[in-house]
Image 1 (cartoon, each protein chain N blue to C red):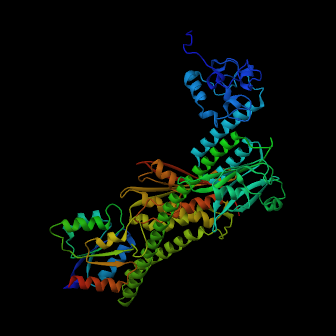
Image 2 (cartoon, each protein chain N blue to C red):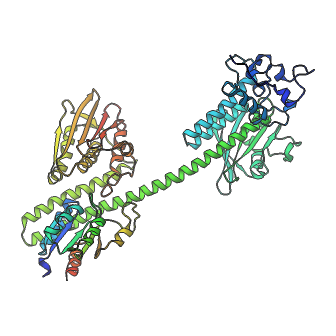
Length: 506
Length: 128
């Protein structure tokens, strides 16, 4: 084994604090025999950041009084660099767990890392605020913690906190009446041992007790850290109150500043996401209104042309023309009714009825609606009727709507020649049945498949409204059922809806 | 004579195409249908229409693309074209922006639903 070439200096040798093991009153680090040998040091000499009272507890470690954050201290970085891959940030493995403070330090660092990871993975601002609030409370050893964000006109600090286990909303004016308002107004960290003590640090005034009276609590120690946006504006305050140890240390301030930064990031991310989503959604809704309008206009065009033809044919006694035009008129009146239903299904007030009916009967009825269109486009339609399906308990109008949408889509997806659409029904359990619609069209890729149920999304720019499949998803979910999709590029698509009869939601 | 002119209806909706064809035939025109721009282009030479009623949103080849090809075709570049479309004038549609409709080299633009009488008047005017 190779010997280490460079001498491993302990913190007291580098910092020259005079509080090494030989001192009359050695620092807790140099007396921490349990850490002896860690990172090649004597006692806690090369693990000082993780020893009781540290992480810059300036009031404890006089020699490190200038250090505000152990993790950015030159000595910390020096040890880290010298040890390389062998560096030990904390000392769990060797069982140095007797120190309560060590545990606290570990949980502090871990909680920051956890929040950072969570921020990377999601953008739910409310959830993030709740998590950060709770972490801040735990890490600072406080009774309660609140994140307040600037909102409204006139701007005020808005937040929510748990009081005796119940969530309470709080709104605080941005003025000098409260410590939070003061921190926001003057963009200043407020670290107060007793919020109502007239002899405060920071030159803060005596604060109003009205908030405590309102929430029937008593605030003692209090720490408020302003939250800044990327342009340095105060967008809120993170606060923590009533430290179990009686005061908030500079470590606590350091952590709270980090939480404030993470909160600012979360707020900015949320704002960005909202802007993007809103822009996308507006574009989608605009397209849908245009598509709906287009669809209705086409129907209206057919009705106008149809009635013109019928009128003229009656005048000239062309009964064959009357018949042809009348059939078309009939179909378009049906299309208009279908479209209205698609829109109506989105109305939460529309209640659906679940009762026993013939599933195969509904399928036959819907297929009948499309038979003429399929014939005109030379598409074959097949129905594979499942045994023991009927009677089934479902909302007949809802399943009718699903089938109209799925069969209509299947016909549109079919190739220009040799198109085939197959509808199957089957009982899949004692209280469960399914109906599937398969086409032999172009199929979908993964991306298209994942977005098909999105409201206002259409893959048929020349005719889709973006309502159809969202309608299907809505109806099926109200049956507590599920929609399954099998699709492969060039191989066609199967939409299968599975309905449970015993747990239908009325 | 206008009533004997041959008109091509390019429309992907079979029912609508059929009805417009019947409206035109009722007025004495000869009418043929194509169900998208691609099919219309292929049949242009054989059919030799004197006017084209053209939808905008169609699969395979839409009305804009067809119109561009038509104007490049030496034998048919002067055939009058009437857009008959549901593309709305006042609604923002990112798929078919209206300025595209307005820029297209067509002779007239009718928004659905058009009264058949108005369509017939427009056709008669363009054929004069």
